[in-house]
Image 1 (cartoon, rainbow, N blue to C red):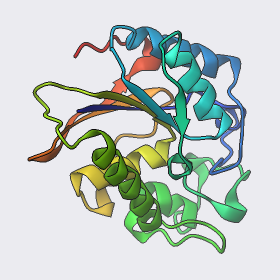
Image 2 (spheres, rainbow, N blue to C red):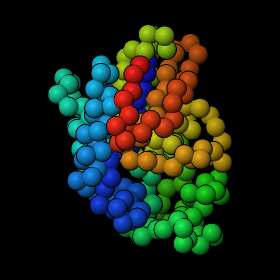
Image 3 (cartoon, rainbow, N blue to C red):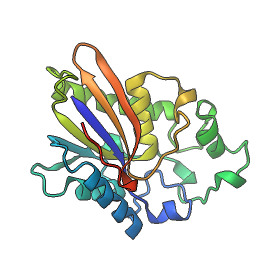
Length: 216
C-alpha cells in the first residue's frame, strides 16, 4: 500500500501569517494554482481512494488534485489541523517572535510546547493521527505489500497534521516533529505500508507546488 499525504494550498491567512488551526479558511488564487500544479505532479498516479480533512482549504485542494477520477472524496474529522484554541487568528512572525512564546516553542522546540487553554497538544495530535492510520491499515492494508504499491491512497490535510502522521508511522520522537522540514503548501509525503513489516517513509518533501512530477 502506498500513501501520498499532501498539504493544502496557500490560504488567505497563510498569506498574512495568521495561525489557522481548525479555523475554516479558504484558499487564495495562488493556493488554487499550487493545487493545480500538484494535480499535474501526480496526474499519472492511479489513486484508488482519497481521504481529506473536511476544512475548506484541504477539501478544495483535494478536489483540484483528484480531478476527474472516479470515486468520492471521503472526509475524516481526524485529519483536521491541530487546534490552536485562543491563538487561532493571531498573526505570528517567527523571525520577530519571543523565544518563550508557546507558539515559538511549537515551531522550534515542539517537545516543549504547552498549549493554551482550549488548544490541542502535539501528543494529542499524534494520537488522533495514529488512530486514523490504524483504521486505514485495517480497512485497506490487510493484504498490502510495499512491493505492489496497492492500493494507492491520497490524503489531503494540513501541515502539522501531516507531521503528526509522519511521527506516528515512523515512531520518531517529538524533538523531530518537524525534522528540519517546514510545512510547505502542497508539499507531499510518501510512505509505504507492508502488512508484515509495517511502514516505510519513502520521501518527506515532494514540492508539488513547484511543478515537481512524481513517478512511482
